[in-house]
Image 1: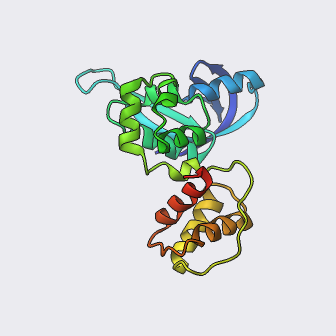
Image 2: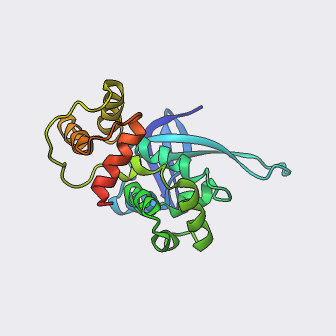
Length: 214
């Protein structure tokens, strides 16, 4: 499985780029919002790295089964995409076209049950928005915490199991790109309630609630 590709962008089309790698040209399908951004920035001729997914396009009964490569500039965006296509009836093509806003805002809309905001996105009608909220709410908190805004301030606390604290630090620093100091403040703020967290997911959920004001 191809999980990452680095090459020179030789062409940018609607929803896809061609990436030149060692004399080969790879067609990489990308979120529609990303394709528009790359065109505006004049990214043709620049080197880029895409975190990729592979899937086979075509009907189960058809003879034309075409392998496709999907690309994202951030590993977190790819992880969020995997969640989106887990929604029944919401396939890769629809999901790529719907990604016209940052992952953080998309995830926040799901977590807040903002069906109206979701319905305004391409390929997402009222029914799909309902499905997303029903199936993904509670699973997108990590993505809704993707770096934005100022860190919270609080003193240190040890009211959480060391392994849970460590796992949460790894998520905040390693995946969400907060600094260790910022991550420590967020964890400490979440622990101020005195709640005992059994898993990193529970702790991340509390951090999300605090940052979203819920």
